[in-house]
Structure formats: structure tokens, C-alpha cells
Length: 191
Image (cartoon, rainbow, N blue to C red; front, side):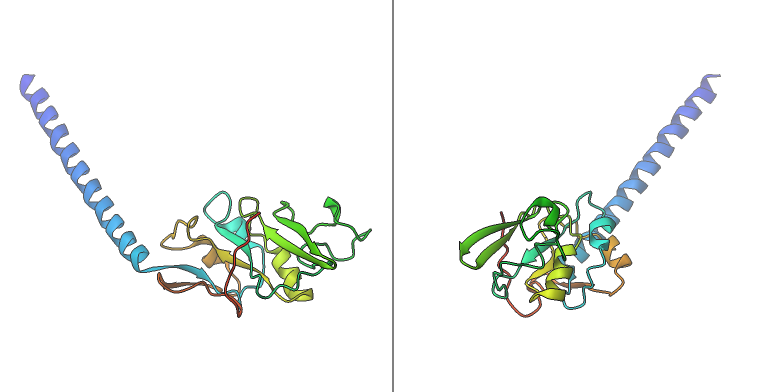
């Protein structure tokens, strides 16, 4: 009876050690593979290909998407009737909440001088839905654009948003590459 107990204990210890070593080596291999990809490249959104489908808001593995609206202020006309800020065909021409386009209230409007307003994006409120970007591109000058915020992106080996993107706007770029924007340098506005 003692021999069987010792055998079982010895077998248990050997099996545990093998499993532990195997799991450790597997974790190291996965870590090295992921780290080598992450170290050289990162996910980027080509704004010229983006169709503002809304997938960025719902497909990201993060609870709140790492894709956010940015404001390329060099392109902005500072319009009183900003199509990225106000809904199309509002009941009354005012900035009441029911007339604003952004579902999360991430865009704020600040008076500069008649008839100009500055529009700022509160990054923490933006969910990457692209509604403001779509309207700004359709009726305005396209100064609102979607882009991955690298400080929030997990840089997944296979991006969940890239898999569902109908326009193939996501790609891996060299870590040192600048953001891909339509025409001008980005000046992110935070509220």
C-alpha cells in the first residue's frame, strides 16, 4: 500500500512539473511572438479609406473603443452650422442636446467671434461611432476624422476591428510612421 501511494505521489509531481514547464514555455513563446510584432509595427486607420460604418465603436476588444474622433483643425472652417456637430434637418436651429449629432456628447462648441466657433473633442466621451465624421465629410470639409489612439490600443496581434472593416482601412504600419490623415497634420483637440 505504501508503494502505490509513493508511486502516485511521484507520478503526480512529475506530471505537474511537465505541465508547468510546458505552460511556461508556451507563454514565453507567445510573449516573444507578440512582442516582436508589437515592437516593430502597430495598427493604423487610413482615414482616406474609412467609410464610417460604425464597426469601430462595437468591434474593438476594449469596452470603449481605442478608435476616437480627432479634429484636424488646419482643415476646419469653424462654421456656425457645423455638420459634424449638429444633426441634419433639426427642428430648431439651436445647439440643444436633441439637435446635436454626437450620441455621447463628446463634441463641444466654443464661441470665437461672429460667426466662428471652435469644436473640441472630449476623448474620454468619444466611442468611435463615426457619426460626426460621416456628416463632416458629407456636408463639410472633413476636418473630423477617426484614428486609433495608440496610448489606448492593445495592439492585438489580430485586430478585431480590422477583421470587420468593410473598406479594409486598417493596416499594420511601422511604429515610427506618422498618423495617416487626409491631407493635414493632426492637432488633437481635447475638451
